[in-house]
Length: 307
Image (cartoon, rainbow, N blue to C red):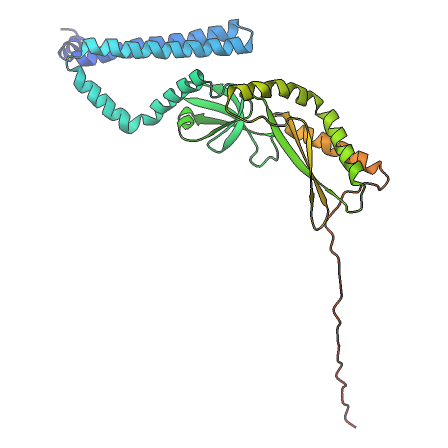
């Protein structure tokens, strides 16, 4: 009697264990084949977009094969399959609900096109550019946090796909890759207001002409696709009188990835044009005006010196 005979006899008496070993071997081979095929496509396909879609297609196909394998393998190997299904479902309810939601979320993301790599989104309080979406996680390059404006912080964030079912998703680029932005300009009382208005509108129109032209056609498609009112995409200027200055509010449309640069160009160009007016237009600052100085009465007590 060889040393392997007891093992063979034990396996024959426990067919379920033998079936599980066979299943794990087949599962390992399928997962290994998926990874090898993904690496092969990564080397052979030069186009980034096509390579990414091909790799994701292989990954999704692999999961479908695995699900089919589980159903066919266990339904034929286990006599009391309903008990196993009941135990499996109970286990999922307590331990794997996040995983199931993540996989369902990934299918929802791809089918509904909630977002895709290259989009800028905000989800679960995290804002960034999507750089990858797999079957469980969405990977983003974070923007903001301790960095001002829409600049990269340098952190790469992995977020469960289950969050697409748990809250709002803000997409900066889906259907309409432009956003509205605005800033205020304080103009000193006594300035030539009409000249200031003409300078600001002229600079905004020239600087933003490309964004305005490109956004009009895409905005028309958004209006036709969704139940939404039409909006003004040309630069607009609103004036508000305050206690300290005349406030100019410039509102305009800009590419979602160039908001900071565009605001810098507008502010810098407007500043130079104002300075060239030789005092006709002056930017205001907070001032304090003293209306009246209260009267002060000082009584000096004379010291009495002893004689």
